[in-house]
Amino acid sequence: LNRWREADINRKLLARVIVLSRAVAERLGRVPVFMEVCGTHTVAISRTGLRNLLSGHMELRSGPGCPVCVTDAGDIEQMIMLARVPEVTVTTFGDMMRVPGHAASLEEERARGAQVQVVYSPADAVELAEAQPDRQVVFLGVGFETTAPTVAVALSRAVEKKLPNFSIYSAHKIVPPVMRVLLQDPDLAVDGFILPGHVCAVTGRAPFDFIAGEFGLPAVITGFEPLDILSSVYRLLEQILSGEPLVTNGYTRVVRETGNREARAVMNRYFKPVDASWRGFGTVPGSGLQLRDRFRDYDAACRFHLPAPVYTVRAGCRCGDLLRGKITPRQCPLFAAACTPARPVGPCMVSSEGACAAYYQYERNN
Ligand code: SF4
Image (cartoon, rainbow, N blue to C red; front, side, top):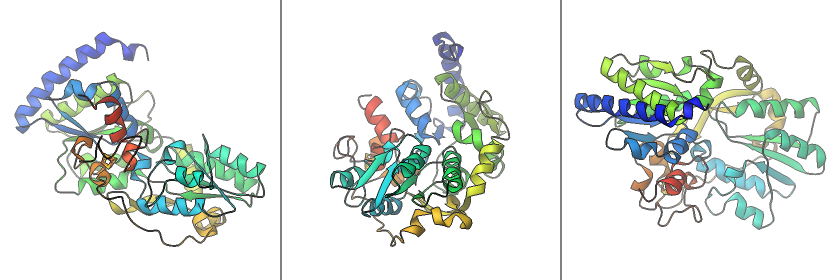
């Protein structure tokens, strides 16, 4: 990686990107707009100052790439309902704790006495269930194709041990279906996509080929170093100029063309695709992962007979528009005023991969 981080190489590529972007801007009559569909990219672009360096030459806009942010308000309410069940200990990744629900967050529920525990992996939740047989331990499954296989492996351990007190609330999502919905929006003003390297390490390239094949836009699977991101936007610019859009893999040191078959196999053994609700998008066909029927005993939503969730977002929250690429964080009237990391109104200000949190931390004063 040292070579990828050499300042001189990055500077030279940046200069070439700027030259090429001028040619593209001339062709389009405006600066090109590229969307990153991965929260880790959003943070990398903000933290390294790339957005600032490239501003005036192109716009880098965030999409539905943060798994915590796209988790629907209804799912958040059901998670909070679970935390209120007296015999339940809810386990979750730390990012979920402060996501505002209709009336409270998981963190606030914990302060009121609910058993909510942060874990670093789903395997920790299984261990907790083994250690506390008198408690029902529920793991909140949030994440994309990258996370779901690790949850499936943890579940396989619980199934093997026939743990009666472990279950999963699955709010897992898969990325290609929401990309299709995004691209069907006639008002979407995006000229190419920076595709999520971590997700593609599992899926491979093929599930994203429709972006070029059906919608005529280029897309590049991208790593997380500044040089990765610069190389990708260079490729996107080249493809706009050539008029031959493709979906290509710019992260070959990690992503195999066919992805990770083993990870997909374990994920498919325990989960099946279902329609799922995304914040900002509504129901997206085939975009969620639910436990297969033979593992229903481990499905927290079935085990605890949760009522239909209240379906609300907090007043003024524009996270949905942000996730659909309609606005940037600064265009939300609440940004850095009524909505801050200390007092978040929406999940995009809470999650470590949220666009508003990244802008607030790294770009507030630009
Ligand atoms: Fe949502 Fe707050 Fe960001 Fe506005 S500033 S989009 S309310 S997180």
